[in-house]
Length: 61
Image 1 (spheres, one colour):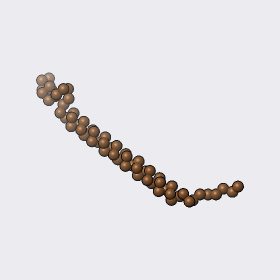
Image 2 (cartoon, rainbow, N blue to C red):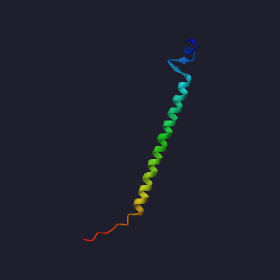
Image 3 (tube, rainbow, N blue to C red):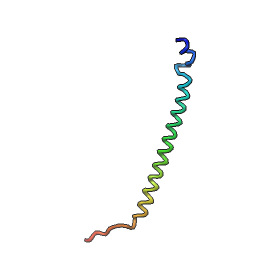
Image 4 (cartoon, rainbow, N blue to C red):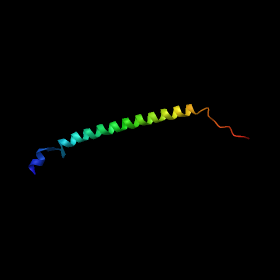
């Protein structure tokens, strides 16, 4: 049991801090990629709507 307490400070192992930093980095990367994906999706929707804006079918009245 004393060996465990030698490698822990305030109830956290030093590896836990490294994993926490890694988790924050992966989460930030996911948020960044998700934001880029949504921006790209909006741009493609705008380009598609601009492309087909004049292709309106007129209904017979």
